[in-house]
Amino acid sequence: MKQLRKIYLILTALSIMGLQAPCLHAEDKPEGLAMSALGKAGLSEFLDKAGIKIYGYAEGGYMYDATAPQPYAGPAFLAFNNLRNTPIVDKISLNAERTVDPAKKQFDLGFRLEGIWGYDARFIHSNGLGDTQTGRYQLDPLQAYVDMALPYVPVKIRAGKWIELAGFEHFSANLYGAFGDPMRALYSYSYQFFYAEPGTQTGVLGTYVLNPQWTFDFGFTEGWNQSTRNTDGYLDLLGRVIYTPTDRTAVTLVLNVGPEYPIGVGRGLPAGDTKNWWTAIDLVITHKLTDKLSLGTGIDIVNAPHIPGLERGSKQWGGIAGYASYAVAPHSTVNTRLEWFNDSSDGFATGAGTGANYYEATLGVAVKLFPKDKILSNFLFRPEVRYDWSDHAVFAGGDRSQVTLSGDVLFTF
Image 1 (cartoon, rainbow, N blue to C red):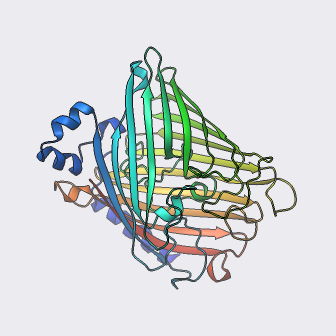
Image 2: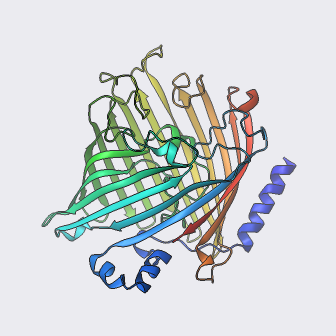
Image 3: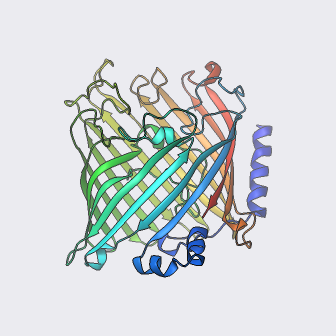
């Protein structure tokens, strides 16, 4: 406990002395270094007229497991960065994007292309795209879609591949939202994000903007992490409702229904189970309590009527996580997450080999150390301490708990 208290004091001190940008919405995102460089090359007039934005980010991190410090001691269940005592390049992302606004009721075309390279790419491959690569660092065509806004009605049609719609957290690291810069305020991910939500989806999605408070999405996808190959040959149903009663509160409900087994990617997978459709429900609520304090919660529930090879009927997994973000200074925030995750699928969801309850508490800070420098202000430092506990001995070395210290550096451009 004394060590944890010391760590807490260090993180708090960093947040007080640090400098992180204030909260921004997507439409307020400042021009990045990439657009500035293209402007100097004489392309700014063309890009501005076309409404095209070029941007990206680079992320590198490090994880130390205080409970099992050996590099390959066993599972850590930390999703992407699971390499102990090894600095890694999480991902480098490059984006080209043109957005459309269906609320204008005008015909318009937009698109988004995003490719990533890094350690995280191996975990986000979709079936049929990039999934035959080997090696620590890989490439992935993360997003590629076209948007079409229709005339006379507030409707947008999207076709292609996108990052899944569910969840409080987001795979990308440089989004601007209610929780500041970035939207994914902590370096590590929740259990829910990695085990109870798809990574990407490929299909067709329609968006209807009823009014500023209500937005509805409905579409069809190839399934969880399926794209040019589909293990079952069936389509999923995807729906989302977004309710924003005020500019401080947002409620998002996402529903995925379809046959998912097996959810892996790559050649040689067994035939998909087309009879037992999974139902995945995700609820996210965010509320900006004050100008400095934001709160949120994310709830995930997945139900599978039957999974081949597993007995005793239906399987469920999911959990609930609570988030808080407090701006202790104009350019720094303290970010916390408390989570409970239940795997009642005999370990199918987590790969632990046994059903278990997982609990985790994470405390981190997001700090911009050089906010006044034109270049260095694009760096963001995010150290954190995380405690995990389970009612079964699932962690490395047969432990029921683990303490990890980790952090990353983000550079946006």
